Length: 122
Image 1 (cartoon, rainbow, N blue to C red):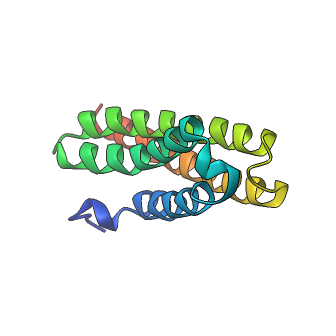
Image 2: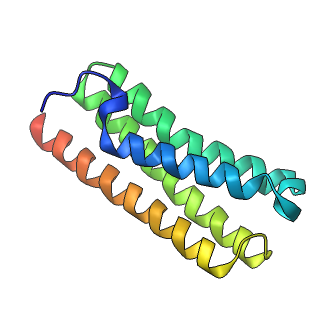
């Protein structure tokens, strides 16, 4: 299937869902008042989506692969910040596991997509 818009990319769609969940957990309770981690986890999740979109719009497989690398880095940052949120008891253990698993899944999809693109430009 030929992708015509970044919104059609499954990993972008999954990153969008992850971002929605991140905003949901970070706008309530103590988490909403701890501005540093709250803002940083929101920015990291948005960065995943944004880098996928920006890379796609570059119209170059090499550039797209580079931006997927940035998106994967942001997914790692998100996982790290979820650990902070759990350690500070801003989120429950079950919510942590749910969102951590979503981050891992997005990261794996990005990694596989990046590998595919890099192979196709050789």
